[in-house]
Amino acid sequence: AQSVTQPDIHITVSEGASLELRCNYSYGATPYLFWYVQSPGQGLQLLLKYFSGDTLVQGIKGFEAEFKRSQSSFNLRKPSVHWSDAAEYFCAVARYGGSQGNLIFGKGTKLSVKP
Amino acid sequence: DAGVIQSPRHEVTEMGQEVTLRCKPISGHNSLFWYRQTMMRGLELLIYFNNNVPIDDSGMPEDRFSAKMPNASFSTLKIQPSEPRDSAVYFCASSLAGLGGHEQYFGPGTRLTVT
Image 1: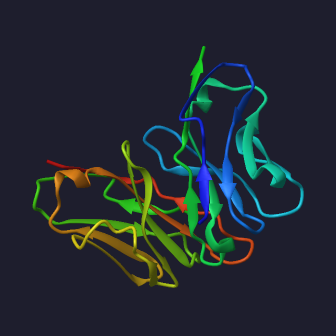
Image 2 (image 1 turned 90 degrees about the vertical axis):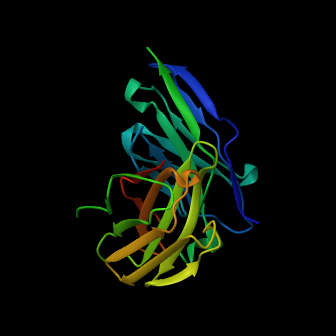
């Protein structure tokens, strides 16, 4: 069965430091992958997505993610974290190759930023 | 576009009362999703519709929950009777399902408190 694993429940980084959030998926074919961010009291906002082509995708707010098929991973990165990046981050994969639009979400990683 | 619209934003009700949550998806989207988010269980998919037809309601916790989508621009999630364990944030999301368009756009959520 398809699944998404985010191994880190909570990560704390210092402002200005680099960030990498891990995501592993389980799916036999080429997946459609997404990263969402949820600020406190808000809905989820799409950061970036991967469908095909270049395995390094750029998103909003200076985030990027790299699809590595050999590792079944889609890790999210940012070279320099800002205090406003403190939020919860969710990785997701489209179910059944996206034929019905259904997404499977990971449990999320909460990011705290130290001044 | 106004995005996904949910109402009410906050609902406080007493146990045993009926609660109706409303959602207006983004115009032109053909899939609609209802999620529930709690600290304990994270983000759970309750039900989703494709072209106004319920596709998968296996996430609906029990018969007290029901959802309808009478037309492409409106959906409701009803809880009758409500219980304290239903307290959560309920999100509605919509997408244009099909090749190349799977990202879901989330509404701001309805925070439900059942006392």
